[in-house]
Length: 238
Image (cartoon, rainbow, N blue to C red; front, side):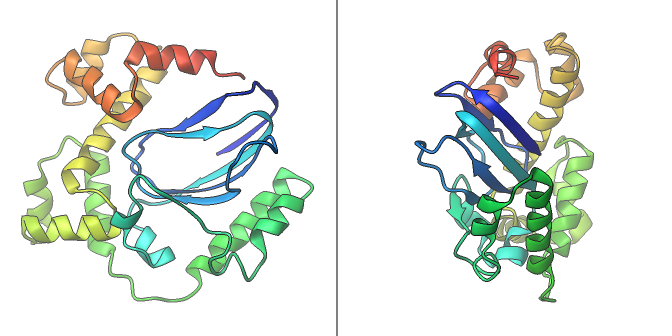
């Protein structure tokens, strides 16, 4: 995702809503705002509000949900609802990534630098122990979260506790919570596409018991009701 603007009002924030994916974000915004420029965001359940004001450039790379341990070496659970300045970690430090991104003259060159960074991240051939988690997350995504976790256990031939440990290590949340995030993300995308009409129909289609359960999920993951979220999205400067 790339966001560019020359005139965002003071006090504007951009929410990173739970999508089931960690992310790496490079951000340039008004110089008076205390922001880290190059940040790894772990799996987030609560919305993360990025301060963006004045001239702003934001580049976000969303990663597969199981890749934090393999790419960065950290247990995903340690990063849930947290962020880390990665400018001094390798290989970012060795390639002076933050300095180069700040001085790059165009968005295209910044994207090239970010692509080179990710290529360096994946180049060491480390043992990949996350393949079962990749299968499990894809399976949950394909069913938009509306899948009994017992079915996932049976497909992987693992116990409930083993599946829980695998998700905590590689994804950062429990399988059940990851399913709730996928369920909410699918409902949010459909509501956004249809202008937030037919709440009851969307709730039923995505496995919520009724409209009130969908509204409760909205509050859990965005801090807002669906109508409040729609108003905030409509009011966000274009």
